[in-house]
Amino acid sequence: MLLLRLLGALIISFAIYVLAVQHVGLPQIRCSGKWALPVGFVGAAIDTMFGGGGGTLVVIYMHMRGIGKTQFRATVATLWFFEMIARLAGYTLSGFYTLSTLLLAVLMLPVVWAGTAVGEHISNRISQDTFSRVLAVMLLLSGVSLLVK
Image (cartoon, rainbow, N blue to C red; front, side, top):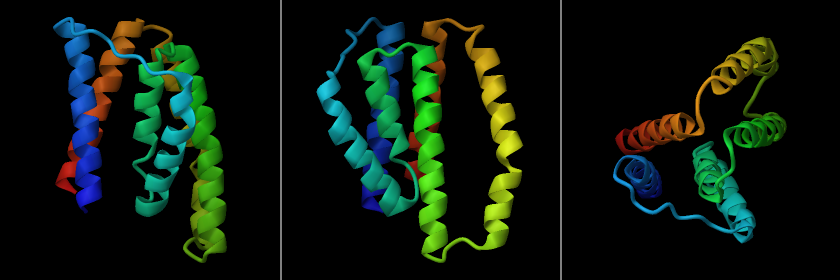
């Protein structure tokens, strides 16, 4: 529980920082590509321990790398697609998921595709700054949800 609250506090702090960069003019901190492996490892460990939550570290990393919204969305969509396949397979082989759970996952694919199409439609119509603000607000909400869990 303590680790989840610390992760929530980290995510909230970063979200506030991103908003402060845009609204107050704080300098924007960038990180190098050398952080990809450690962030990916820690994110995967958090996902494994808690069944999720590590993806927000990847989002923070990518934002700090200064990746544009189109590349960001493509990378996250691809990464999480393969992560979900691996998670479904692992949980099924471990006996946590039943055939009805897998069928539900398959039935939800059209919803996933529709959400992706809507996200692309919206993303094509907003600026990079708006995208960053929306991302910061989503991270803020994610962090708060971890604190109140």
